Image (spheres, rainbow, N blue to C red):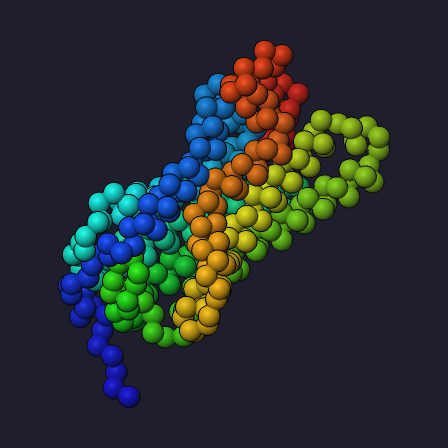
Amino acid sequence: MASLPPASSSFGNASFYHAANQSEAIRNAIFLNLGYIPIYFLAICIYKNPPIVRRYKTTIIFAGAVQYLLTLPYTIFNTWLAIYVNHEVETTVFMCTFIRMGTSLLNFISFNALTAISISRVLLIVFKKNCGLAHNLAFFFVACLPILADFVYMFFVSRPTPNAICGPLLFYYELAPLMVWNGYIFGIPLIAVLLNSVTAGYLLYKRYSASAYMKNSHRTVNEIFVATALLLQSVIPALTMSSKGYRSMQEIYGMKTVEWLKELIETSGYMTTGLNMIASMICIKHFRQMFKQIFLRDKSITRVGEVTTVTTM
């Protein structure tokens, strides 16, 4: 079999953003933008009550900030597709690949923040190792390295491939990088679920085997709620991203899937950021109080969060 030409030989070839995708882009852009509402609420909470930064900076706030910053390019891209691409828009294979795959990659690795938090929490809660924001960032970057390397590799060993959004674009023709890509999509979110489950289980064990004082202390109780919030927060990307990885494998290997399941998987993926932030904040009393105070004008809540404390990390 003759060797394929280098990927760089097709960088300047014509590629197109497809108008046929506009209806899906509109749906995706709506869900992506709606997903920021919980993060905007988090920002309002910080503005109204700055001390929560100290309390939640390595957990809920870190997750919200990273997800917002890294999903924003993907949201802007889909919004542009929804508004502007009502006709075939010409670009190059290189730019199509870089923008289409690059924004998708950033969107996915944003959820590595949850994995980084889960590692820090296990070390802090179970192994009593002091972990702060710097540790979160270090764990996050380490978790991102394999998929970033795989993305760069795509520009060296790949071939032009049709794509519904923008194509042709470069994608792997070798099995190994493809397995890394799909394995990463499956595996990384599940690590967060596993580690958060360990932390939550450990806290529950300590609570029900502790003295009556420890069982009822605000710190012990709220740590359990924070652990539960982080567990729920990690479960949602694990479900949506893993299902998208499964869908990707179906397409690659020519497997069939029912249309309603395909639509459900596609739609749920664009709601991940909003859903996981809601799931995390709804478990924590402080944010429920803030919601009542800000939006329901609950006058009975005058000093939010004074008894809602968590371990400062």
